[in-house]
Image 1 (spheres, rainbow, N blue to C red):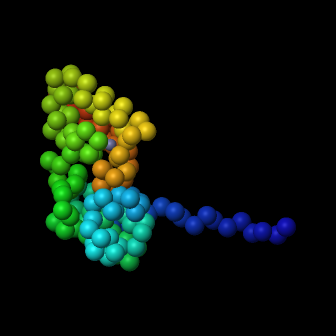
Image 2: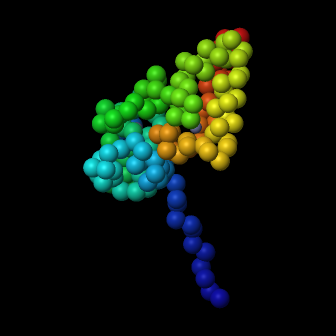
Image 3: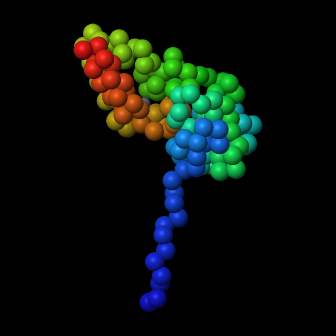
Length: 148
Ligand SMILES: [Zn+2]
Ligand SMILES: [Zn+2]
């Protein structure tokens, strides 16, 4: 046996051609949910999601082809801060912030339970295709800390 050690090909994603942020890999189901067939055919799959709120690029591929927030039929978070974080319960950052300030955890809890349950649809209702739990928790905690 003389098998040289080879580094696993780096499965991590590419960098956004516009802002240079590391993209998050998104699969076909997510792309189908957010893009028209025609738009989807413009990107190689898996494509990447640019998570930077200040960048117009939503999806891009390794050939630096990009689709912008304005190209999409629906607004997506964080490109549009008023868009729901995830389609799970449709909570926006403002909703969660308001709950955090009131100290009301019920909607956040429900969203997290749903996201963790088998009926979670995050991979098609969240633009990045990830579970929204981390984002929802982050928003709640940040708002709580800010609200005192
Ligand atoms: Zn970007
Ligand atoms: Zn979700």
